[in-house]
Amino acid sequence: MELRHLQHFVAVAEDRHFTRAAERLMVSQSGLSASVRALERELQTPLFVRTTRRVTLTPAGRALLGEAERILAQVRAAHEAVAAVQGVLRGMLAVGTEQCIAGVDTARLLAAFRRRYPDVEICLRQAGSGALAEEVAAGRLDLAFAVRTAQADTEQLRAVPLTAEPMTVLCHPSHRLASAGAAVTPQDLGGEVFVDFHPDWGPRRITDAAFAAAGVRRTVALEVNDVHTLLDLVDENLGIAVVPRHFRHKRASLAALPLKDTDETAYETVALLPPPQATSPAARALTALLGDGIRDDGDA
Image (tube, rainbow, N blue to C red; front, side):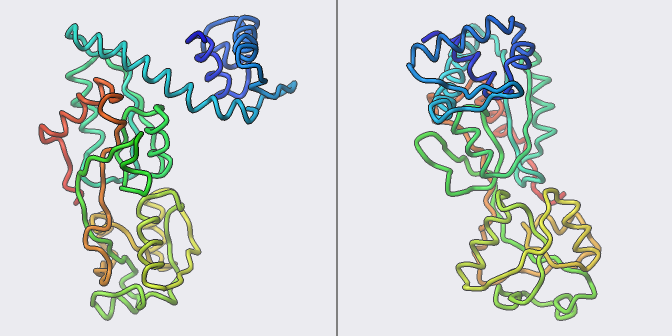
C-alpha cells in the first residue's frame, strides 16, 4: 500500500469530488482516479460510490478513512521529528479550539509560536469540544483546547489540565432571579426557558449533566453556536443561561448568580493531545510555550 494512494484517497473523501481533489493535489484527474482504483484493487473492495455529480464513501471507505488519516499524520510527525532533531521546526501545526475557552489566550499563544517558529504553517479550526476530541484522536489535529469530555484520556487521546471553574447563571437584571440576588440550584431553575449552545459544546454538556444528575428537566428553547449571540438573547430577557463563570465579564449588564449543588470545578478546560509517542514536535513546542506562561486567566 503506497502512501500516495492513501493521500489521494483521503483527498477525494474530504472533497467528495475527484476533480476538486485533483485540483487541490495538483495532479491529473486521470492519475488520481487510477491511484484510487489501485487502492481498491489492493483492498479488493470499492471505497467510493461514484455518480456524475459527487462521490460518497462506501462502508469500507468509511472504515479506511480514519486509519488512513492516522497513518498520514504519523508519517508527517516522523518527518517533523527528524527535522526537529536537525534543529529545524517546520511543517504544519493544526490546532483546534472551542470559543472563549478559559486558561489559554489562543491568539496570543499562536502569535508567540509564529514569532519563534516562522517556518511552521499554522492551521486553526473552531468547533465544539466533542468534535475536537474526535479530530485529535483521528490525527486531523495536532492538539486542541477544549472542555474535558468523556472522550478524553483514552488510548488515542490525553487531556492536560489548564484551568477549572464553576458554572454561573446569567439573566436579565429585571428577571425574578436577579431581584432575589442569591445563589440558585438546578431545582430553582426547573421552569425557566434556557438559552444554550449546541449539544457538542463543552458548557452545554456540563449543564445537561448537572441538571440530569439533579433530576431537573429543562427547556433549551434558544440554541446558538456563538457566545455573543447567547449573551444578546439573555440581554433581551428571552431566557437565562448557565455558563462558565468567566463569561460574566463579557456582559456586565447581566446579573450573574452562583449555581449551587454542582461541582465547583465542573468546567475544566484542557489541552487535548495524542499519546506522547504520536505528539508532533510542533504540538510539543506549542505546549512548551504554555508552560512559559502564555496563558489566560479566563476573566477577560
